[in-house]
Image 1 (cartoon, rainbow, N blue to C red):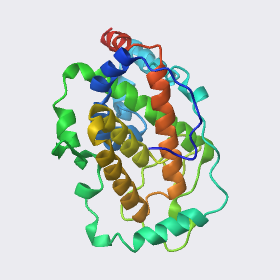
Image 2 (cartoon, rainbow, N blue to C red):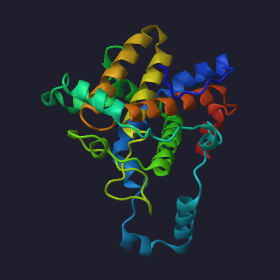
Image 3 (cartoon, one colour):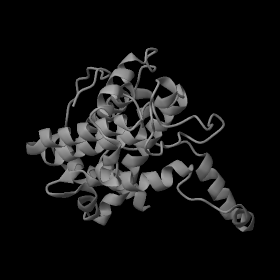
Image 4 (cartoon, rainbow, N blue to C red):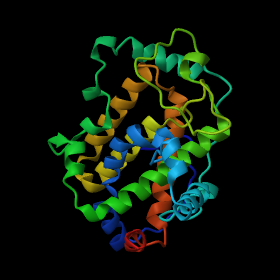
Length: 274
């Protein structure tokens, strides 16, 4: 799948390494399932305020250091400096046209978790989420590292552009599901959401890429599934076409860099075990 935002890059792919990555990276989608529950809360672990006061001093220091430490991109080092997205377009004409077209073909009655969640994408005759749940435990370290890298990149651009939701940009948009909040912090407010790029679209495109790498003979089928899901989410007012294109560009750039990365997955696994 290609995007107008993609940069033309020449990448040398290591066959052995990529084969190893294919088996391990596909587990990202499990993190996708967990993402909606934990990541957008602001922290992976939520401490009660009173409980914090009772923590031993040494543990409090460790906790504070962990929370203030900058995020480390282990699989794609310096990803935040190497991936670029243009600012959102000034015109909303494309988003209006695409939304209006999709609303005429996506009736509200069809909205449900089953046809709008990445978990239910069909992979080799079973829900993608079920396949992911069958993967070996060793992949969990990579699952969360890839998830965290894509999530932090998404949050970075959300924080950079702070684009308003689709319903604020064009007339007649109705939101039929919750739009995830963007990076929590001083810039966060009630109208600041994960739109450009959209964390939902990033999840979907990443899942599609991994399915296609794992089962390349059925790439076209997976690409069509992904496009259908993105179209439904646009039609339900969760983000616009330009937001989807930015999300696809982010995912494509990330995987290009991942393919050419000198970091071995084994290094990340060993580091996570220490």
